[in-house]
Image (cartoon, rainbow, N blue to C red):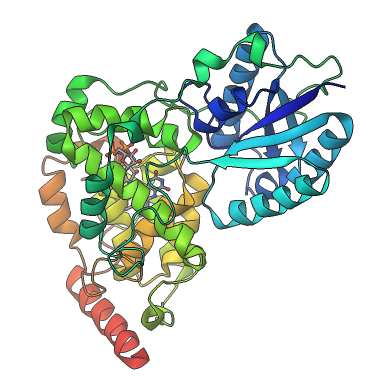
Length: 440
Ligand SMILES: Cc1cc2nc3c(=O)[nH]c(=O)nc-3n(C[C@H](O)[C@H](O)[C@H](O)COP(=O)(O)OP(=O)(O)OC[C@H]3O[C@@H](n4cnc5c(N)ncnc54)[C@H](O)[C@@H]3O)c2cc1C
């Protein structure tokens, strides 16, 4: 039987500029691309009607068609990775499994156990850096620890950057029948229905680079959620890897340093989660682990449904509920309001966003939530309480964004503020101070 290499797609649903795929295609063995609909993840979703699963499914099927057109076989399974690899290594002579690194806590544990499982049957496991420009320990402070101040991190990141870090990998060029395997006994790929998911499509922009004009103006538009095309809307493609971060970075480096800076934040949060996996569920700052949050269920519900009486927060939450997207400025307003004004645990908000955001990414979500709560490795100070009113005036003065999402705004049907800002601000500062000083 011919020996093959499996290329395991995860957060990199593309053929072009794919580090691990390029390496697999140069391994000397014929390659079979593979995707696993991981039951360990999918079976925990609150609903079987999930836009992200529909999107992944369509992208996997697109990759499969492209593979077949190039003369190869694409495999897809619905199952647990350990079981899938046990079956595949029995059925085929697998020389190695190639993939791209994934830095989330579940993924790092899963990957080391898969590597061990493969080693036991004489197969290699090779993972490549693809999702970020710098990972793990590549950017450290002078003391050899991960920088906890973004300014220091981005300075070191920019100083380390060379053209080759952004150079594309030739995976598409190598994706030819000569480097692919055609299997005659491949198990048919599962359909959405066979996995008990219901098709649920949402509007996702095409997986292509944003228009040049948008990128050139980005620093002026990014904080104006009421504008059409105020930001790139590419987070979802970075999440699923339908765009390569290198191509977006190349464009940003050429056209807009502010956009490059935002993409460096993404690397930064990935690096922090890899170093501190416990921050997925626990405040990084030990002094803020025992904040006596109020966690009022009715107020949480009002926040989720966009009924707090603070229009920027409500418009953001309604956009999220209807489309799976929320502009960054509204995320900041909504997150700050939940934690500080309502004194609800940031983890409640983190979970709600995780269920709803199409671009949900653990490192970005946890990093930003902890930043807003003031509890993170990198954090806005715990005593910072943004005024929703001032944010409205600063970022959506004409209420253009609010009108888009709250049709009853300005009528008596729109709720009165759920809490007074001045009162809530003082309550939040007193509560966080007591916790901070008490623990210290
Ligand atoms: C409470 C909260 C939760 C968030 N959760 C997520 C999440 O789950 N997934 C996610 O991708 N982003 C998250 N963000 C970051 C940011 O809001 C989104 O990346 C951005 O709104 C996506 O829209 P865009 O692609 O148009 O961004 P643009 O403004 O066009 O930025 C370009 C890219 O830069 C990166 N970026 C921009 N802002 C940030 C940031 N604050 N932190 C990290 N990376 C950034 C993203 O990859 C984004 O696609 C969160 C922010 C907050 C305040």
